[in-house]
Image (cartoon, rainbow, N blue to C red; front, side, top):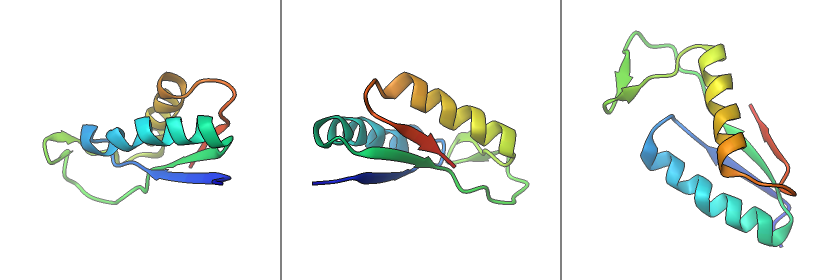
Length: 80
């Protein structure tokens, strides 16, 4: 049914609730998952009370952590 799932994340717990659903769908359908965080230039240290990820390294680490903690084999997860 689904072959690819795109999961946009902004670093907030609310956005991360979609990860649980995406992981289940991917597992059941054999779909690949791409986690996405768009870097936004801003001098705000927080957004809605959560750390604002403004640097590539921060975003990369965040997405890798989500991939490692929330998805299990055989689900293929990439991030950008």
